[in-house]
Amino acid sequence: MGRRHFKKGVVYIGSLISRAGAKELRDEVVSWKAERGRELTTAILDHFDAIHSIDVDLDIEIERYFLQNELNGLDPNRRDVHFQPGVSIFSPSSAYKCERELYYKAIRLPKSMEDRFPYQRRWARNGTAVHTAVQRDLLYAEKYLTHPRFKVRRLSDGSPAWERNVRQVRLIDSNVPFQIFGMMDGILTYWDGSSIGLEFKTKSTTIATVGTYCMKDAQEDHKLQCIAYSLLFDLDEFLIVYESLAKDSWTKGANAKPDMRAFYLHVTDDDRSQLIDKFARIASMVKARKIPPADSTKCIFCPYKPSCQSNAVEIA
Image (cartoon, rainbow, N blue to C red; front, side, top):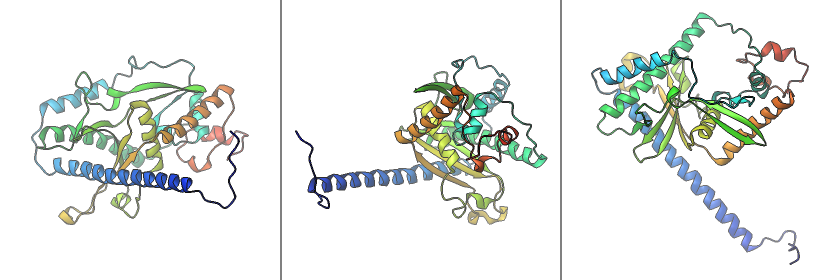
């Protein structure tokens, strides 16, 4: 059968129906995501508020778990993680980073010494401490709330699905092989049975940083981190929760500004494909020993600045 020729400027009914149907489907998906996002973000903030609205006695079982967890954290071994030798490794937290930085890390280039002021070290310390406090809140909430919205997924040995308990490596082959290695803040089970990835972040300057004026959406680097987690843990839905370490005045009471924000992310196959393409591109350059271009907008926290600046490759 010969090729069908269409007259320029003529619109055919079939194509109109197809376009209309596609638009209707897109609109339905967008509407569903928005509704689902509102439901889950409201639920997680209500969940945290609920456990912080009641007085609960110290739970020996929960506290014993966290003490044992700290002790286990002192063991640096990775016997339960099986890497493929000679294959580039990327972490979820590096998904947003400059491709040149990832290249340097993959070839194990020594990092430059990081200069930190004392207040910056306290900044990092506080963020780490709050992460542990939030995980404690989750265990207390599922045990002591009458109708908890979320529960922490448990592994076969009964331990919570988070941090070192779920660390793993996944080998992906996209023309060139690479590995993703990481662990996440938590995998939750919503009351409807859905598995939800939790990514928790802190903000340390002012409470305004989590306000609706300053924060319109989750940060792009945090979204990409969740996309990487979706490849590791086979999850599609994520909640990215921010807490400001700065709080409103104690006397504000019910009129205090919210100190927490939550955002919903539904990861698509296209999202995953784009990240796979990025990691595969860098892995290919590592194999060819070809240095990728640098992104000058991402230099602030890069530990390879001296090496990058002395390199002859033009910064993109």
